[in-house]
Image 1 (tube, rainbow, N blue to C red):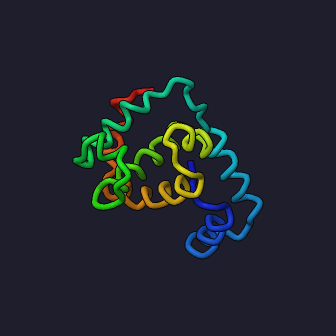
Image 2: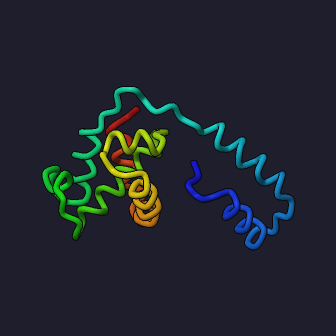
Length: 132
């Protein structure tokens, strides 16, 4: 699943990979998204996800649900949003689960992508424990 815009992907493919045919690239991208599209489960274990992410980051679930915005707390919130997208949740569903605004969800997902690059193994451990 891609979280970048299609224009960004096309510009990247054109400059870095030398792909000139925009229609070909967009067709391939749509096929990839369709193949890996998931239906978000109706009864997702959100509390379990929060507990696992808090354990990974080293904060308590009470800190996660608090109003504090410093240290590792925002990272935990960002990772929860990102992992929900991995399970096929749309932004509206993430807003409903977390109580975050749509703008906050978008920013959280993009920020978490940077964190995930360096900690991919730990993210895989969380998704394996949830096991949907």
